[in-house]
Image 1 (cartoon, rainbow over the protein chains, first blue to last red):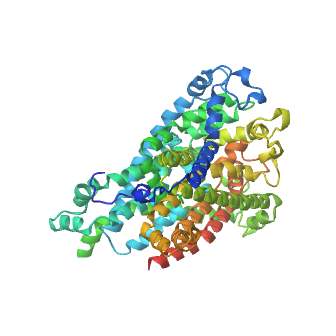
Image 2 (image 1 turned 90 degrees about the vertical axis):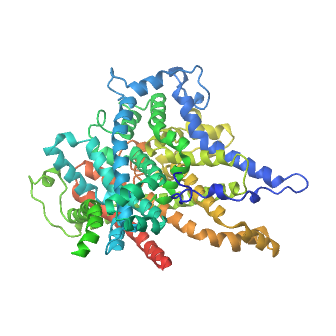
Length: 314
Length: 299
């Protein structure tokens, strides 16, 4: 990205395969190839079934409610479900607005991703290229935080946070979630940055040292500019995992209808006041997934890079 | 003094993170262990309005002998096995099918992988619809689809089954994660130099033998990390269950993480922390040997 001679972090090796592995043309019809494509298409259809269901159901009105129409196109495509999902349904108080939830979740997820990326970058730097005694021990101690299930800290964490809210009620919801995603993001972001900086030539930093630059100067003038690829991976990773988080959102997100992130709002809509209205719920599920899907479509390569680095978090 | 000047700045830089992790991971784990050995079963005790006592390992004994919690543990085991088997199977198969540079490979790859970008709650919404338990005339969801394609005999109650309902939760989980395993294996396949295969081919090895003796050994480290990642992930299964069943109390598909949320919600901090510590111990049993193995390889 910024400098092609530097290795990019965790990017997949898919595209580096030599073209030589393409099917070799032998004489006659290639049956193996046909079977391969048939299987690929079959699995594609299976994977896309939930998408089909979501789309047709979200456009259905009451006339299409009967179960024998479940898999069939709507008689008439109706956009009402989408409007209700987005704006909420104030009259019945049954449906909170996904639109509002999208807004407040963005306000929570973006700061969380940015702050934890910078923390990770600073940690990664001093753990790889500006080391101190026992740096490895410190790294291991930090890394362990990645493997613990959140369930193992939930009770004392909940007690601690409710205590905090007593004195500072305003910290409930978004500020609490930012804090928690930043803290529990430290191990994974540190890991990704450290691995990346270890592949950066030592000489680059040594020469800055020789020129008399201190740690902060070296970090901001030499290291930060070459960290962009890592930042993209880490930002995407943190954004997606905070966006899709449900456990913290339920217990620390505050009032489900007005404060909590989009996963909680969606869950509320799905439960409904009496029973699930699938038309609205499906539309809401799609709307709730738009930001992460957009990132996946636009920055898929980096998305996968983050996955490779750490799916063992929390 | 010189040392302080050299090492002071980096230590200061990492100190905030270290302190935060110290408190929010290590100290809180200690707190969980401590609470799990008390009799704080009611909110009044948690707030100190009523007394609480040290009870040793009593809560562990209570949970591990309660048929209710054993049902959760059994569900977790069944789920983990099904989830790992399913994702590894489809992930490997898809990577294998795509390995030979198919046309439109990128399209297949992206679409197989996209479910990972969707939250479990959103996925759960659609799968709740698909896993509708009605059959026959009333069937919608997958049961209706089975009727269409002449497999009506496969209709079943999905998550309503007391013993095997948890497999219904494993299906969406496999749907979400198989693409990820595909990505891991595909990167693995592509990391094997073509010369290796060619050399084997020249030596007269059959396709199967090339896989058996050339490719599989190269892929086994990837398979091992995939197993660890999936195992770790499956032990914490929570979102999908809540999204599909609507809460913390649905018996057939309950798992430990759901029990923990239920106890925490009802103010039973002692049992909630006990469940948390049990999950931590299970994960440690899985992870520590792996970390030791990795550390040995590094040397």
